[in-house]
Length: 323
Image 1 (cartoon, rainbow, N blue to C red):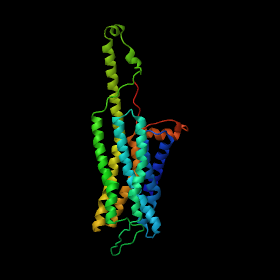
Image 2 (cartoon, rainbow, N blue to C red):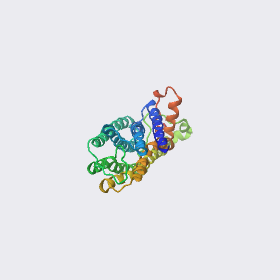
Image 3 (tube, one colour):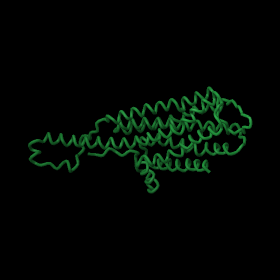
Image 4 (tube, rainbow, N blue to C red):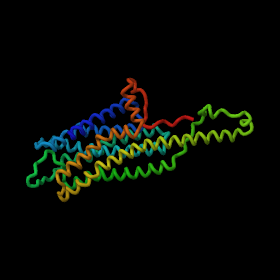
């Protein structure tokens, strides 16, 4: 029942987020987020059913089916963490270049597309490299064993987990540094100020027009910087929660995998707990989107309550308010 609940939550929650993001016009953050959601959805549809059956029953499957299943497993895991890298890059770009929206969107789309062929390069060898099989006395053979070929294990975990994990940690450091000293946000030339700022005493305007104008611009810049920082911190909070959840769920698996390939010391129960802890990550991610970001909640609510939502834009971060 627990495995069934995890599988259903993974499929339906990620499908809901995927459909919501598809029905609204793309913001830069939507592209890597859609890539992450697609990877989690594939886990629920193609990986978890067989993973649950092989834990509960003893049966054999065709070698081609097992090769496709194990390849999809590695593909989706690699795509998830690479999508997190793309999300981290977009968040850093959103902080350092908030007005370059079109350029950020093009790069985010390109990175999100590249996630999948790179993930495929890591996953495809799993279908062709044989895995050594060793059974302990009294142990029941499971269908579709995890590939424990030493060379492939270290190749896959390097590019599926450890290198992207280091990149994510570095990106988080860059994001924190960028948030500590954000770029100046200024109004475009020709933009009018608010009526409240236009109410000036006629005597002050005649005597000190330059000083008053300078004070108005300083007030506008300070307000924009404050709003900018708050929005970026809210958006960054979701990315940090996704990163932390990924590390909590998948680190045990990527620790026991090389240990077992080298020394064959991991029990079946440990394998099951660590593997399904990783799968739980795919079920929890959509709830992180909704809990950590009010903007994602607005996307979900708006896309399912408005028939014309495809023609409207609801970004994951609010726009910079006009002065």
